[in-house]
Image 1 (cartoon, rainbow, N blue to C red):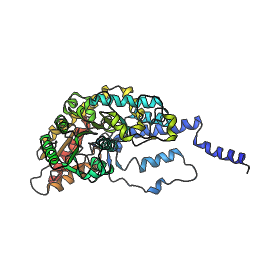
Image 2: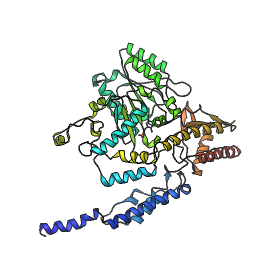
Image 3: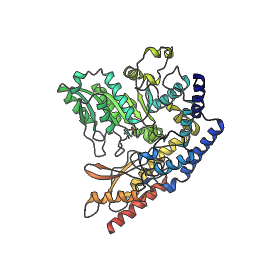
Image 4: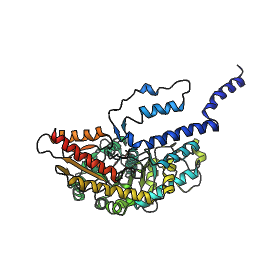
Length: 481
Ligand SMILES: *Cc1c(COP(=O)(O)O)cnc(C)c1O
């Protein structure tokens, strides 16, 4: 076949990748209709389905020939959107609930269709400036001065990793010294920080677990003493990580006191506020998290506290040039991209080059709704947690953890006889079998403990009262059997 003819044949097939307007409309309409039906059925789907039949990977196998979208959506519905945890469910009180506010999906839709290249200013100055504006807004929320900056990441784990790499480079740590380098965490620091230390090549460094008070908050006095004795022993105290809300219990470390100690001894102070950072939008949260403004770096997760869909994290640094020193790179094929612009591009501030235009999914709902409902939703979550703590505490047999610092409540049932752990496991199982709400467990001080994490934008008073009633009822039922 002559080349031109072959090209025309290939073109005819390849053009299927770019549907005509009528086909686009049909595809978009079917997708939106599916999303609407999913949302209207949220109550029926519930929040956890542990017994739903699960398919096999081959259910999703690809083929040479095309499929029909309606059939594919039915498959998606049965095999993906039923079994397991439903993160869109209004009864989600497990782990740290994610978000998924609707206009964020529209932001993703537009970002994906236009596919602006947000990694580099030269390619899309507008996309970079929009993200810059979001970073500046978050940096101001944290209380960082001019010269600060950061990056929108895929999540908190990656943001913590980048912070640790920035801290490593800022201190010019050398491999030959790693075995003398000391990091200060607590037993409650998120495990992604341990992981990040390893991934950053620092597996040999020493990890000191600073003692905590009875609310699982770091003891700044103990931190100070540890740093002094480590330094006297010839070690190199380097990094302290304070939590702006731990995942397990929602405890907020005394960030101001930690900053004081870090300042005095010249440590890098990183604040992991992936869970709790956006409570800074409330008066109460600003008080609780006071001191975060003195950190050198901080992580916030918009896919938690700003109710965005998964894939939205944020790293903020007090001195943006330190992040750029750790992350920037260039090459000959990038030479056209170097203009005289005065701002860093995301590619200068992260290990990523090509990346999704993360800013649009975040900017669109924030601007569309305004900040007021976000603040209200966060304050509501703080109060829901307090309400739950107070009400469950009135039920005989339930032993409550400390007053929540933020929106996580820990609790367990104390049966008069028998195995307390088995009892609480059974109680957890009963909540899971019910499936309308979803809670998780942890180990605290060696005890099997149940948790409630209020952070879902669809969780309101009714969902909390439903769970309270369920726990009361199931505890009684378990006692009777
Ligand atoms: C969720 C969480 C992380 C990890 O963030 P991902 O977005 O899940 O990667 C880190 N630290 C804390 C305190 C968290 O709650």
